[in-house]
Image 1 (cartoon, rainbow, N blue to C red):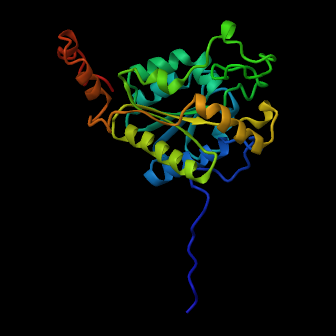
Image 2 (image 1 turned 90 degrees about the vertical axis):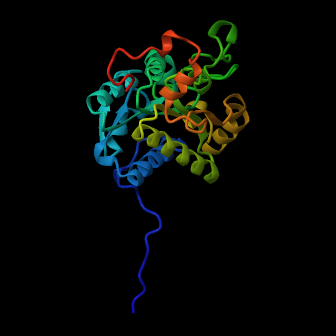
Image 3 (image 1 turned 180 degrees about the vertical axis):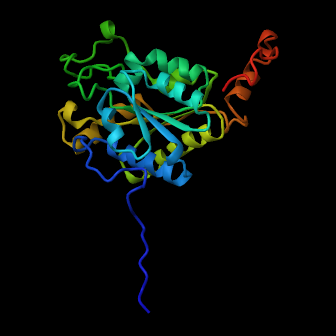
Length: 281
């Protein structure tokens, strides 16, 4: 009797069989695979819509098998909000870089989060503008050299970097925030778990979820992939510590709205019946 072979590793169905255009050492490809694996495992590729704004992820529509929409720079959360409200049964995610999400798109990010939109955001933080040539980003570290900060980021004139997870953690509409990285197999597995939880939260109606992936940009950092990972570990991880920054389910709440109600329990006006049927989405 002939031995039967077993497939133990293959391309996710939600990831198209095409060559990506990402630079050697870039972590976009790893994160793409984790998102695609999650869509496969949850069986939601057919009802998923991804939103790709401006940045290195601008061509994500060439790589994912689900429906994709191109958004203007920074507007992915607004577009994702519209899609989710029109198709509440759908699974909607935005895939954004730090320049896109934390600079021109900061208003859209904060307001989608505080409204508790039932979307999932995958946020790639490589501390620089990647596609447009390596300018200083909102997440660039103090003293970090970029094309527009050749002497290093001067916090006296440019301000301090934005820690997105810490910033959003104070908003009541947020259900889940976690910062991860994908520099080794152990951390890749942790990132996959976080991404899956973020999508599960959306499917279960828990609230807004964001996973921040601390990443590298060897090309614009002027380093080899190995040097870039070392620099990231030595500099970015101390400034952007990994971990869970908010998880309302872990706190014992069914969703973000329930957690918000508990925090405002002593406010009479906040506990009046909602004037709109169903309340938050």
